[in-house]
Image 1 (cartoon, rainbow, N blue to C red):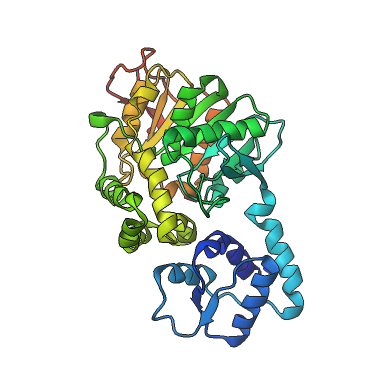
Image 2 (cartoon, one colour; image 1 turned 180 degrees about the horizontal axis):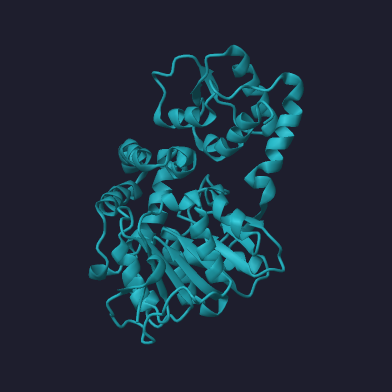
Length: 397
């Protein structure tokens, strides 16, 4: 490994968060030579430069996240003569180089940064990630799937390309229609939709609104609301209540900003913290995120599931304490011909570790593998107790 490559790669990964955090963003750094190199690398990488400090005692929560990611005490800076090569190597391997960015403009004028990889002649897969998450959070999924498919990963409206002055619609219909706008921009008549967490809700709404545009649905640890059919975990209830407060006004968002930030940091996997905390970076970004994600969490999905016959895989686990497994079971029971896969362990955050077995399951389903279990009853909406079968899959007789 070239000295400094890890540091340059970490700076690129921290880029989305560094661009929205108010400066200065302090990071712990005891070595003056590393501090000087940090400034030069940031300039070459076009990333806002953090401010190195020797005393880490007063760092804020986001400064600790960035400090942990950069780990300047352990990641040596490259010699000045090697910096151009180190930067070039880091850029070549970075998500933003391997995935081509296209800015998609929707009918209401919103810009959606969308990243694409894979052969455009292969079957298209639209990754619908969790609301408000940078596209690179789905890199593990998208990278593996792009070997066999043309993969698109759009980012959420109002949180990335048009951060300043956003005032457009934040409802689920607008967000679902964004997915169709992406297909239009890429000239795609149909695509397979893979929805993760809240993205699963948007995938269902898009399929309900334009079933002819959706080849299949894969719904992973969905944050579903089906009234009394889908109890919610304590995490879902607490988060929904705090988000409702933050969405009311800039003042309310500022008041609960610290609480929500600490809540998320408490559950974020350390190596993903710089990504999953992105929409919490400022009170205004948080307010907007809470309006968008609050709409997803609070929309009763039953009207959109009525009569839905899209080929569907629904995935949850026995021990998901973030998004209640009962919601996924209820969704599967309402979609004719769906397959419900219940893993022993996992939740919507662990999904983004992109374990090979999970991504391969998604790839098999998209490729048309129907040997994943018996389908649900042909009559959509019929409630049938699930029967466990082989391989951890839980399917309907």
